[in-house]
Amino acid sequence: MDIRVLGPVEVHLDGQPAALGGQKQRGLLGLLIAAVPHRVSTESLIVGLWGDDSAQSAKSTLQTHIWNLRRVIGDVIVHERGGYVLDVDPRSVDSIRFVEVLASARQTIVTDPAGTAVRLRHALGEWRGLPYADLVGTPGLDAEIRRLDELRLEAVELRIEAELASGHHAALIAELDALAEEHPTRERFRAQQMLALYRSGRQAEALRAFRRTEQYLGEVLGVEPSEELRDLELKVLQQDESLLVGTGRQVTRRLAFLVTDIEGSTRMWDRHPQAMATALATHDRLVGDAVEQAGGRVFKHTGDGVLAVFSDAVAAAAAAEAAQRAMAANDWGDVGELRVRMGIDVGEADARGDDFYGPPLNRSARLCAVAHGGQVLMSASAHAELTASPPAGVQVRQLGEVHLKGIAAPERVAQLVVVGLPADFPALRPDTGGVLDERSQILALPGYEVRERLGE
Image 1 (cartoon, rainbow, N blue to C red):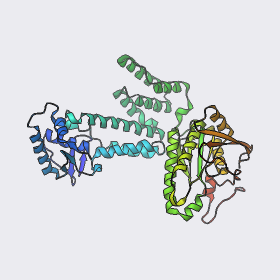
Image 2: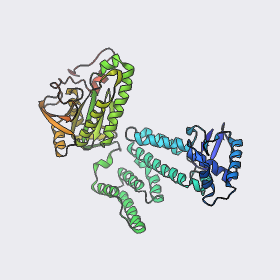
Image 3: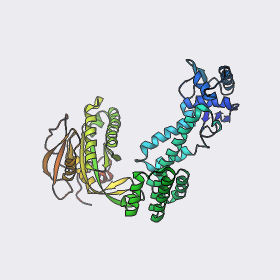
Image 4: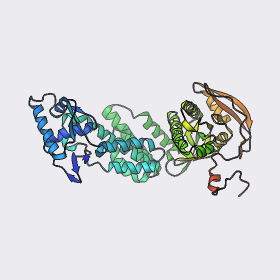
């Protein structure tokens, strides 16, 4: 059974459309579909079909409609505790599948914008018009129709955001012009249009687009554009380089990085491969949650560690502290204690699409390499930012100057001390250059391990 409500209501049985009857009978089915997989009481069905002024005969008429529908689509309408439930696989309903894709897209748009755009475009292609289009005016479906239509617009916004991040700004301009005019109060469409125009070398048109929204909001609603839209206008006027992220151009920004690595993971993989696979998935989730809650994002997984980016070192430290607490509180089963070492630095880095390059990322990796499991090290620059507004429950301990491999000048290193967790560690490890050294991994041969680069 294939149930379609993203347009006129249709039920297909073995690929053939079913004859669903008249308006009230279809409305009854629509109410049951909207509630899948939950029960709807008889009273709610009556009010949903006829409103508050239903006739005395409504209950018997309802029973007739149910009987007629069962003849057409089978005994999937089940009586249950004073009401009815449509007993079908929820994923047979196109609206439920659509909402699942949208929920997934919210999670993957940062890490996989191109794939997210493809999935959203496919999901939006399932729409055939207004949801429950032939049942508009059915009292019990008004809220569901509004909900689904709002989710459709959110999906369009997300799809466009994903395509902008993938560098497809020029191809979006015409579509965004129509969307911004059709939905003048949805400022996100206007912001996306301005961004697409600016990235296409049409700065004046981007500013004129802002003026149209400013004029509409002022004359029709008596309000000003949101702070976000006004900030975007200012960035366009200033030709802010950050607006070009997502065009494929390299943009230099001041960013903070957190690099992590699981201590002794090779040994644990060898002894407990199945338990370690489960533990690694849990590790990725805990670290990812901590990064997201601190306002950052994980942009790469390397070996048994992650690379995350933040707007400042305070956020990076907050994520490290939360991740270490989550690690310490988790039961790791057969692998025993999972201890993660971390490094934090801040500075000017090059952003190209969804990836980053530059000294602060390299220094974060080197700090991670010399740390012990459970230890968080930070550079002098990161420590200076943290000192200005340290997160609650976090202290810093100076460890002195350390020579990091590949970095000429010695680095003054500090340790982030998380209250309640171990804070005393042995002397810092010698940096062999093995941790997160992607080029060494590329040069590795089966059966061999690159320990140190002597030349090229």
